[in-house]
Length: 155
Image (tube, rainbow, N blue to C red):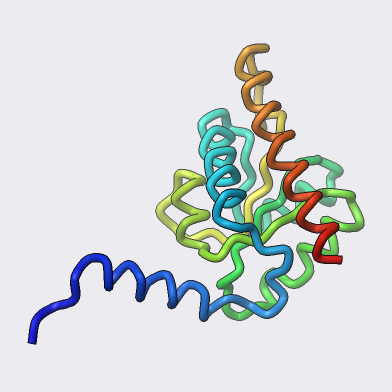
């Protein structure tokens, strides 16, 4: 009769996330890369070096801004984001998919689920201190290398 335990509930949640992935969600980040990517997104959000949402990301890419594009894999309808990877490839921007738009929004310090984010090294306004820039740059380069390695293994 009883209710599910917390462990069973979390397992069911994980299964739901995996089931609802879009078929184009490749390269999909593994657990370790997801964790690093979300930490990078949190730091970038704190330093105002983050563009959230399809409209902002596309606008930034077309204007020539560089960064790492992180795209949620459970977007419905998928047509909303199908053009973003193509833009990223044309601009030479590394991109990676993560399973959940909710987790992506949480890492980006918003309550609203987010389709994609662009992590940049330069804030929208002003400048970063040398120390903050160095910390962000080291994390950024580590994630960028992992994403590039992952995308070459997919192709």
